[in-house]
Image (cartoon, rainbow, N blue to C red; front, side):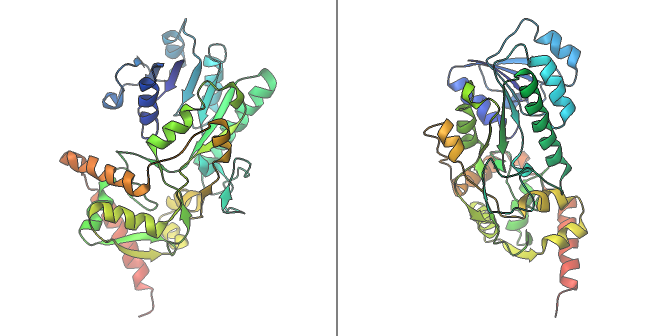
Length: 334
């Protein structure tokens, strides 16, 4: 197959790009070239900003693809742009949406692709929903051959995943654990969650590439391993060689203290999220997520430690954590 990926060097997409090349397909990556260290050998790079529509049209002139995957579309205007750019030159367009688009608060803990899409807490998720709706409109009106993929929290070498955590310098969480500082876990830590390694996600989406039966269908791709947030943080601690000093703080307290966490927590990670992957397995026979969280996060910790420069610590985030903990403990009964 001849495949074009918009992006293709990010946290989730890197593993998929590598797998596509390993399987012998003709891969084109269209991006700004800022993450060349994650570009797999054997692909063709088109260095252009996808937001420069005129430059993109010029760069892909005369090309046709079996599949176009856009990893970095977030708002309906970007879908509109892609319809104009790719509708006549691809047999399949895959939009990477988000599992955070599913109903919040949830009415049932087990999520399927038919779970309603509604998220009053997070604009990011509402924009993803609007993107999906625009694609369906275009399919109904003009037969645009789209497929929707909804990842949940997917991690790999470059991310030590968490809920309330430091996203820009992930090593901060491990550093904090190793120093014995208190680690904030939202609620009582017993809500259920699903962590997915990017290599497992890659196996799932690979099976959808070029599959015409997936037109106008949506799929989430996750592990079948279900853990509580307490177990998740304990597993990260085990990978770091320590027992984390966990403090449980109510989610609504965290959101009141830091309003920016409303989407991340109430709109995504605070409610239990267990995913039924039956639909994916029906369309991709043999799909199995094989990397346990214990295995995956251990690999991630080792990746960071292998190059000391990767182990950067965000002291501002440490200060924020300490402020939240002090504020919470000051109101606790003595």
